[in-house]
Image (cartoon, rainbow, N blue to C red; front, side, top):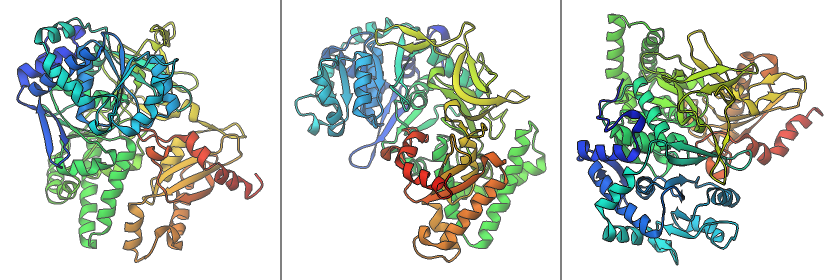
Length: 605
């Protein structure tokens, strides 16, 4: 579809501040931003109020000394001060840059040096511990910190003080003059890649590339007017920058800030959203939660759900083939939704969903099929920071379960001889930003960018991901194995929540498996098994059967010879997952190196 909202100027000249003014003028009374306040209630700002706050904060940051064109670093959670400061800095012509809250001191120092930032906005004491030493580092240009939590600001400028200054000095004329000098080709932000294999790289992103991506997405998706969005991923990730800041401004939609990513399921149950984006790990966890609830139902009720699941999958399969469901199937599906499926979905807050999506990593096909059994088609998409987020996507009118869809309008992709995906088009960046402000070109002479992902394109133009090029396992016999493919096959069993496959340079593969902490108790209870599931032989026997069943579906090179079962779930806070919940293989291999070596030592391999 095409956006129904007024575009204040030609798409090629649009900037984010022009769109925010449009929202205040045309949709000023509509909710824009909501969050849970200290009392447990919810606070909401309208688009008119958001623009007012943007002007106030802009004056405050201007008084601090922030200048047009300079990068300003931010390390905060998903809280209103982060979201509003981002817009305020943008209106000054400055370049807001979010830094992952999990970043190590060395990574922060690198970003501070590379960006030449003089100012950083941080949340509180936990962040100050890593940032304060940089103020005394002669190699870092950092001059001052702004601290959001007033009780933890100490000698630094507090956010509240800065805002009060802005309220006193705010000038509509100065605010208007500053943002009107911004051009579409100016940088809107710089995203520093997560840097799991070295120093983070700086990807400059312009107003024009963001608007171009937003327009292309609107032509591919179908969303209600002013739809709500649950914002829980870090703003340092391109997905949440697009979904949680830029697209809501473009669409005048309603952002609900979720300060704790672990609480996203609770937030969904409270809001009952029409749109939901989840990275694969989130969809896996939500599926496990629903499966655990279903396992506790009486047998008759479970049978009714399974029959309704079959009807929903038949309906989805018909749509996937591009066919119109028959009147009989349509009626059966409607009845199944109303009487069986929607009541189940309602407990998760998902009965109103009309658009669901995923990105960041390949979705396990069993998870996609699970949700299809409830009539929810997770529109898997694919893209990179270097492509301003989404490059390919499925859509309600054209999708293939398990694929990541087809390129957005105006974008091209092809597969290199070694299987690497190459991309070209208007939203693809030209190169990485150097510390001196110049750009290190990353495109070949024909404008193609090598993504580092391996995949294939089917006869209908759908892209299917295999794995990251640098993560492919090459065995001692020279065979290439996609660890993600093997891991996703193993995780199809509900008891296996996470998996890592290992075997580079070895003659066979081994794996670390993590017991699903939500599903395991429900699985055990349904079979009358008491006590800690990890200690029960029945659980270990079931895991062994799951590995055997997975091996039977894979070729010999992909099969797992040995494994170890773990109970502690991997997460961002312990380092095994990135902030966007992707597996950090290097970290897991380092943490469990002795265990992995022991799996090979058992037979002297």
